[in-house]
Length: 553
Image (tube, rainbow, N blue to C red; front, side, top):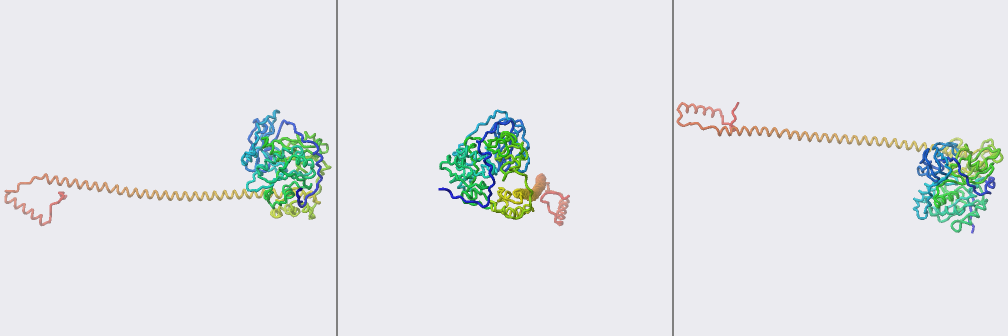
C-alpha cells in the first residue's frame, strides 16, 4: 500500500543539471601536502584549539574541542606537524576569515586507534557525548551539531525522517552516496532510531533519483520505508518534507520536533555510521564538483582541503570560467578565495560560466505582482517583507514571520524585477540578531550593575550593622569594666580603713592591759581632794572615757 503524499504550497521547477556530475562513482582525493582545518565548521561556537605551532598530530586526533553547548570537535585529517593556528579565509557568505589549524602532512597518514562504540549498550547521554567528541554535524544544510538533535528528552519523537531529496540544482553528492553506500547509511539510521526512540522511519527521495531509490529499497528490509516524492524545489526543506510525508505542519517559529518528527540528511547518517560503528571521527565528506570544470563528479574530500587542490583534482576550471559558487544556485554564495578550505558545510562547488550563470540583470522597482508570494513554500508575503527590510523597519518584518523564511530563493527566482529578495531577508535577520545580541549584552550589563549596587548596599548595611554591634559591645565592656573597677577600688579602701581601725583597737587594748594600777590607798588628804576636784570637773563637762582609748589631739 503506497503512502498518501501531500503537497506544500508554492515551489519552483528550476533546471536540474544533475546529469553533469551524477554519472560517475565517488572519487577519493589523494593525500595533500597541507591542510587548513577551520575551528568553526558548524552552527554555534567555534571549537577551542588544543594544539599550537610545532605540535605533531595523527589522523583522527582531536585538534579542537567543543566550546559551549552548541559546538562540536574538529580533528586532524592526516598526520603531520602544526605550522600555525591563525586566521584564514573560509567559505562563508561574509567572506571573513576564521581561525584555522594549518597542518603540514608528513606523507605517512598515520592514525590514532579508532574505537568502535557499543552503541546498543552505551547510556544515551554517554553516546551523545562521544558523538560530540567525534565531531558530527549535519551535512544537509544548517550544519547543526548532531549530538543535540539526537537528544529526544521531552520532544516525544515518534517519526524519524531521512532526507534524501537533494532538491537543489546541480548537487548530486547525496544521490551518489545513496547509490553506493546504502547499507552503511541504514546502519547509521539504526543508531539514530535507537537514540531517538522513534517508532517509524521514513526515507524521502525525489523521484528524479531512481537508482538511489532502488539501492535503498534493496538494502532496507523492513526497518524503514523508502518513499519517492515528487520533484519540486524545495522539497528537501525539513518542514516541507515533514508535511509531504506525514501531513504534520510545523508551527510558526517552531521546529519539526514540535510535531514529533526529527529530520536528518542521508550524509549525516553515513557519517554517524563511520563514527559509531567504525569509531572514526568526522574527517571527510562527499563534495560535488560540477559546472565549467574538466572532470565534474563527486569527490570524497578530507576536511581542510584547499579549494584550489579540489579543483585541480577535478581537472581544473575550463577556459571561460567566471568564478566559483559554494552550494547550489538557489541557496549558495560566491567563493571569495580559492585558498579557502573545505568544511563540513561545503556540499558542492560549482564552477560558473556565462552560459549558465549570466551577469546579474539590472534591479528594477518592485511592481507588487505577487509572484514571490505564490512561489513561497512557507506561505509568506516576501514583497511585504522586502519593503520593511529595505526601510529597516525590522519590527514590521518580524510581524510578517520573517524568521519562518527558509531562504530557499524561490521568491528571487521568480521575481520579474530581479530583486535579490533573500539578500534583504538575510540582512534583516542579521540586523535583528545583532540588535538582540546588543540588547542581551545591555541587559546583562544592567543586571551586573544592579547586582553590584545591591551587593555594595548590602555590604554597607552589613558593615554598619557590624560597626554598631562593635560599638555596643565596646560600651558594654567599658561599663562592665567601670563597674568592676569601682567595686575593686572600693574594696581595698574599706579593707584599709578596717585594718587601721582594727590596729587602733588592738593598740588601745594593749595600752589598757599594760597600765599598772597605782596605789590609791593611804593617799594624803590634799591629793585625794585634788583628785576629787578633777573627777567633778569631768562629770560636769560630760566627758567620758573613750571606748577606743584614742586621745584627742
